[in-house]
Amino acid sequence: MNTFIEVFAKRQDVLVEKIWEHLQISIIALVIATLISVPLGLLLTRYQRVAEPIIGVTAILQTIPSLAVLAFLIPFFGIGQTPAVIALTAYGLLPILRNAYTGIKEVDPALKEAATGMGMSSFRRLSKIELPLAMPVIMAGIRTSMVLIVGTTTIAALIGAGGLGDLILLGLDRGGDINLILLGAIPAALLAIILDFILRLFERTSAKSGFRSLVSLLVVAALIAVGPLAFAGEDRKDIVIGAKLGSEPAILINMYKLLIEEETDINVGLKPNLGKTDLVFSALEEGSIDIYPEFTGTAIVTLMNEQAVSNNPDEVYQQAKKGMAQQYDMAFLEPMKFNNTYAVATTQELAERYGLETIGDLKKVEDQITAGFTLEFNDRKDGYQGMKELYNLNLGDVETMDPGLRQGAIESGDVDIIDAYATAGYMVDLNLKVLEDPKNLFPPYQGAPLMRQETLDRYPELDVLNKLGGKITGDQMREMNYKVSFEDADPEDVARDYLISEGLIEE
Image 1 (cartoon, helix red, strand yellow):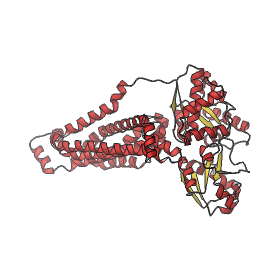
Image 2 (tube, helix red, strand yellow):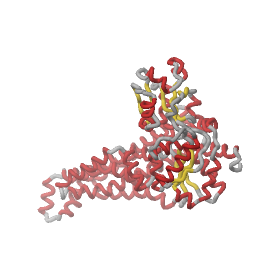
Image 3 (spheres, one colour):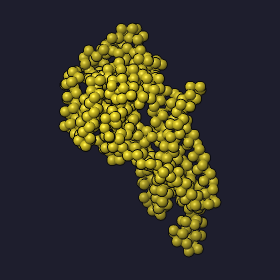
Image 4 (cartoon, helix red, strand yellow):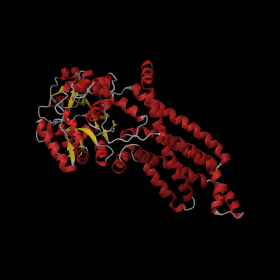
């Protein structure tokens, strides 16, 4: 409890910012979903033949995994709040639409007939009789939608939309830091409870005030969501540097920013923790970000769908540089020295017990151990699929998990081996044993700035990033990752300290 209080005290400014972002995204999505669903639900009561198919479509939208929807939207809308709001709006349609339709349908037929007998038109009957009576049911649908949207908004952090999901992702990345996870999860739950209570009050008053209650709710919500934008200063960035999840990408993009702004007049924005390779590369292609640190091996295997020509770092870099230019018109600047290759790691105790020195040694215990692999590694040719083919392995029990959870899983004994990154801070913290790769399954993974060629053509001074070429050893990168992941150091401070120590920027 004391540790949680310390984390809260240290990050309370960030927490307030993230709560506001979360609230803003959620309310914008709710307002749009309401403006779509209520009129559509009322219209469907007049065209009942198409009602169920249309409601069925919104039900299908709600069954699609949220991450898949976000990934689908990136090529069209980029990253940030826009695709997040679109996805959340789609998730919020069904409860409001169904309740609007059902609420009108369940109005006593005798009242409808009496209104018609009094000479009321269909519209007048709707506005004066049906809608006021149906408002409590409609408001109940809005309440349900609000809770659903607030909960789902946490996943939007994966595409740079902000919100409390940023804190949860940071906790996951730092080995399942329960305090950071709770710092994001508890406010999200409280936010849903508070908003549900407020909407419950509107629901109760709606029985008397009718449609005016809904109008009042939408006006208040719109002012809360959009109001701050009117006072926000415009902060334009010449370029935006993105990064995948993790401490290492966060450190590298801060190095890029500091170098660029030290040596040029370019104004740089940062978008850390954007998810896995496919999401970040899609954002680069679409133009939501202009640069991100990518690894030569990942570019070849994942993006180019090829195999590395050799295990020589220079040859692999040239293959990646040429291939990315030909296939995607991308520019790959010079790589750093450290090789953040994949590794298969286990505890020193397990390695000694079974005599494990190489990946091939796993064959003799493949039915006795549990592997904890990330989804990406489990599916890659230079990952578990390659291990099965090259080393004739068929591990009996493979658990797939988020990258941030695997070190906690091996520390607790839930898994026996994990896929790891050679420069990860937890390799130092847990004193893990890396199994040798004598058949060279894993190609070199040297990090380098990847950008669209048009970006480099527009800003040729970005070649200042080549000053990092050949720098940062594996030990230096491991130490920096350890400081961020386990000592809670700020990635910007760690990046600045390194650049100053190397004489690349002034103190």
